[in-house]
Length: 195
Image: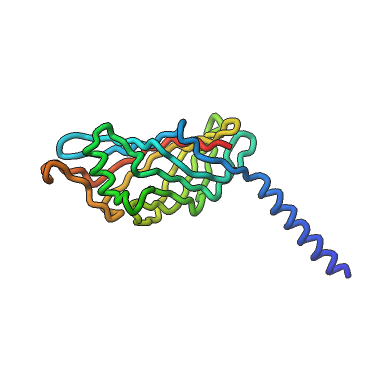
């Protein structure tokens, strides 16, 4: 009888602990209007930049004492045809390279938070791994970002450098192949998740 009571008490404690942990996590959604993502690259003619106008996604954050303590279910998406450079020819070459007709979004899905390191001013450094999918090609990636929680907002800021060919993307060309885009690009993002 005592043994059964102990098991019951342990099970109840675990259930309460699970419920408590679930309550700590709150769901947030990407605020596209206040978020930015830019891609920087080079070409045989000049350096270039293209910006995303439509960002989507959501995440569960555990924010305690104004600091992000944990994250799960984080997703982030860029609508490919929202990428704009101010030059329609370059935009169309980008859409073709990213196979926008068949793969209308670039996506990132968090797999694991490897380490969270507190910084000054309530910020923290987050080392994480996830799956980045571009033009239908999924790759496991690791990146380090800075998180800053303030009120009902969590700001995630960082950058990621990659080679287009590592995602089986042929770097775009223009003017019958006389202008060639460099393989390596840098993605910089400043994303606000709002509760």
